[in-house]
Image (cartoon, rainbow, N blue to C red):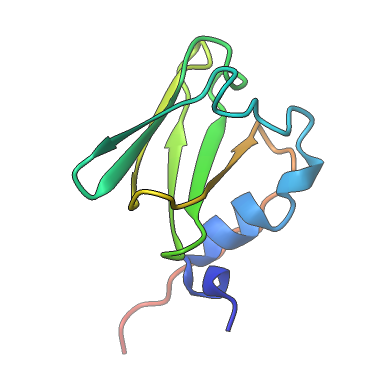
Length: 112
Protein backbone atom coordinates (compact mmCIF):
# COMPACT_ATOMS: atom_id res chain seq x y z
CA UNK A 1 0.00 0.00 0.00
CA UNK A 2 1.25 3.49 -0.84
CA UNK A 3 2.27 5.20 2.45
CA UNK A 4 0.56 8.39 1.30
CA UNK A 5 -2.78 6.56 1.34
CA UNK A 6 -2.76 6.51 5.13
CA UNK A 7 -2.45 10.27 5.52
CA UNK A 8 -5.61 12.27 6.24
CA UNK A 9 -7.76 12.67 3.13
CA UNK A 10 -7.58 16.45 3.09
CA UNK A 11 -3.78 16.27 3.21
CA UNK A 12 -3.57 13.78 0.38
CA UNK A 13 -6.28 15.19 -1.85
CA UNK A 14 -5.67 18.85 -1.21
CA UNK A 15 -1.91 19.02 -0.90
CA UNK A 16 -0.33 16.09 -2.69
CA UNK A 17 -2.62 15.00 -5.51
CA UNK A 18 -2.06 18.07 -7.68
CA UNK A 19 1.02 19.60 -6.07
CA UNK A 20 2.92 19.68 -9.35
CA UNK A 21 0.43 22.15 -10.84
CA UNK A 22 1.21 24.90 -8.33
CA UNK A 23 2.69 27.90 -10.13
CA UNK A 24 5.50 28.39 -7.60
CA UNK A 25 6.88 24.84 -7.55
CA UNK A 26 9.41 23.56 -7.09
CA UNK A 27 10.44 25.20 -3.87
CA UNK A 28 14.10 26.18 -3.80
CA UNK A 29 16.34 23.34 -2.62
CA UNK A 30 17.58 23.51 0.98
CA UNK A 31 20.97 24.82 -0.14
CA UNK A 32 19.37 27.95 -1.63
CA UNK A 33 16.89 29.16 0.99
CA UNK A 34 15.12 26.42 2.93
CA UNK A 35 16.88 25.47 6.17
CA UNK A 36 16.74 22.06 7.89
CA UNK A 37 17.94 21.48 11.46
CA UNK A 38 17.47 18.54 13.83
CA UNK A 39 15.78 18.78 17.20
CA UNK A 40 15.60 15.38 18.90
CA UNK A 41 13.51 13.06 16.73
CA UNK A 42 12.27 15.95 14.57
CA UNK A 43 13.45 17.99 11.62
CA UNK A 44 12.63 21.69 11.74
CA UNK A 45 12.20 22.81 8.13
CA UNK A 46 11.93 26.56 7.72
CA UNK A 47 11.94 29.06 4.92
CA UNK A 48 13.09 32.67 5.17
CA UNK A 49 11.31 35.69 3.74
CA UNK A 50 9.90 35.01 0.24
CA UNK A 51 10.64 31.26 0.45
CA UNK A 52 7.01 30.62 -0.56
CA UNK A 53 4.00 32.73 -1.51
CA UNK A 54 2.42 34.82 1.28
CA UNK A 55 -0.08 32.78 3.33
CA UNK A 56 0.61 29.61 1.31
CA UNK A 57 -0.18 26.24 2.83
CA UNK A 58 3.20 24.51 3.04
CA UNK A 59 3.30 20.72 3.17
CA UNK A 60 6.27 18.64 4.30
CA UNK A 61 6.21 14.87 3.77
CA UNK A 62 8.74 12.35 5.13
CA UNK A 63 9.04 9.48 2.65
CA UNK A 64 10.43 6.96 5.18
CA UNK A 65 7.85 7.47 7.91
CA UNK A 66 4.88 8.30 5.69
CA UNK A 67 4.08 11.25 7.94
CA UNK A 68 3.36 14.76 6.85
CA UNK A 69 2.75 18.20 8.29
CA UNK A 70 0.88 21.18 6.86
CA UNK A 71 1.60 24.72 8.03
CA UNK A 72 0.78 28.24 6.86
CA UNK A 73 3.34 30.79 5.76
CA UNK A 74 3.07 34.33 7.08
CA UNK A 75 2.57 37.50 5.02
CA UNK A 76 6.30 37.56 4.15
CA UNK A 77 6.40 33.96 2.88
CA UNK A 78 8.19 32.70 6.00
CA UNK A 79 7.27 29.21 7.25
CA UNK A 80 8.39 26.58 9.75
CA UNK A 81 7.40 22.90 9.96
CA UNK A 82 8.29 20.33 12.62
CA UNK A 83 8.35 16.85 11.08
CA UNK A 84 9.29 13.52 12.73
CA UNK A 85 12.57 12.52 11.06
CA UNK A 86 15.92 10.79 11.54
CA UNK A 87 19.27 11.68 9.96
CA UNK A 88 19.24 10.83 6.27
CA UNK A 89 15.44 11.03 5.86
CA UNK A 90 14.15 12.79 2.76
CA UNK A 91 11.47 15.44 3.20
CA UNK A 92 9.44 16.63 0.21
CA UNK A 93 7.96 20.14 0.25
CA UNK A 94 4.95 21.61 -1.56
CA UNK A 95 3.02 24.81 -1.34
CA UNK A 96 -0.56 25.61 -2.15
CA UNK A 97 -1.79 29.12 -2.78
CA UNK A 98 -5.48 30.09 -2.64
CA UNK A 99 -7.58 27.64 -4.62
CA UNK A 100 -4.80 26.52 -6.95
CA UNK A 101 -4.83 23.59 -7.32
CA UNK A 102 -8.49 23.11 -6.40
CA UNK A 103 -9.19 21.09 -3.29
CA UNK A 104 -11.63 18.30 -2.57
CA UNK A 105 -13.41 18.88 0.72
CA UNK A 106 -14.68 15.95 2.78
CA UNK A 107 -16.71 15.84 6.00
CA UNK A 108 -15.94 13.42 8.81
CA UNK A 109 -19.12 11.50 9.74
CA UNK A 110 -20.57 11.34 13.25
CA UNK A 111 -19.67 8.30 15.35
CA UNK A 112 -22.23 5.50 15.09
